[in-house]
Length: 250
Image (spheres, rainbow, N blue to C red):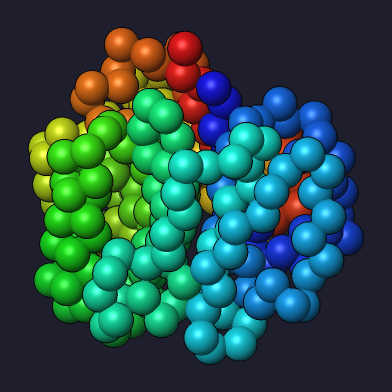
């Protein structure tokens, strides 16, 4: 089963940049989108063999997640069950026979770190509890924009970005806690080397120079590690400041 994830930075925008072709060529059984910035009534839901599942933010033009699925999920749920966290459309869960797929767009702490307290002390623990509760029923695939580069190898210029949003000690430690609670970064399970990124600034030709950050992930419950066939990043796919990432399970 192939699961692909992409922060598209606007579903209406990406539809004008060849997304239908990317989807058709992807071979994905499940395709998770983040930062869709739209409501369902604003976008024609015509994705061929894929069914559409939405979790839009209350605030117009902001955040939101969408999951496209070839087969009908056993169940679909939005949010993590806590009103204080669920108005921004950041979590969309689809259930399949062997596991859950959790499509997530983790809150950014912001340039001045204004949402740090919320991100670390409110969102993080609540999201991890949600995942662990799911794991009591079956394993979980967590994919999406997690808005953190975990280690120095995960961004091109770590020393210049220490303390900046996405590379603070607090965010990195929070991601370590997530992994320590039983999840595996599937890309690092296969690839130990540098130079692999999923987001690039639009400024200073950062993408063509590969001055990027790896902040998009496909992580899996440890119980799914024996089924990991591959994990990938697709920087060649354009249309957003992020690129698709994904995982294949046997």
